[in-house]
Length: 175
Image 1 (cartoon, rainbow, N blue to C red):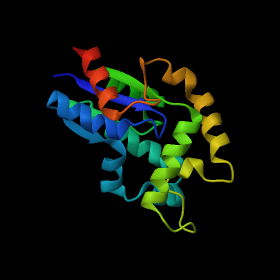
Image 2: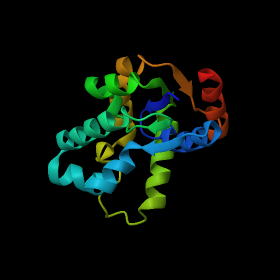
Image 3: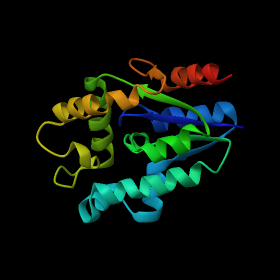
Image 4: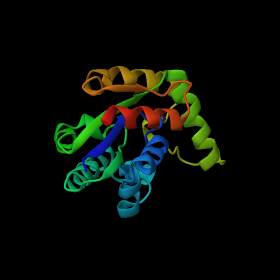
């Protein structure tokens, strides 16, 4: 049982689609950000206390660990598969798909999630990479920076589709 790895920018549906896909396939779902938070605390706190470089080290360790397992649907953090050693480790375990959506859809999804998880506007942002006054521009800039690396993997568009439809498409692609 090979793994299925879902990559792509934040807000493209990796966790939601991943859970549904795992159920369809009878696999276990693992979210790399959840594993990191269980071991090291909330991601915003990691960024604030130790910086992005330490967070990326944690991602690398989780990728190496998961690469040794089979029968997983792995939802990765948006930057995990941009690291060559992490991408090589997980790419070797099965199929990798990059979930994609427009800048506006990503912004809508991420801001909606943040409002649900964090009603206090004075609390630190749940998405540290989007901190600042113009998250839409930050999303556009990060997507542009990451595009070539995301393009290494087959894309599955999540724009205007239900997570169930996206999961069903991926299930068809791997069979």
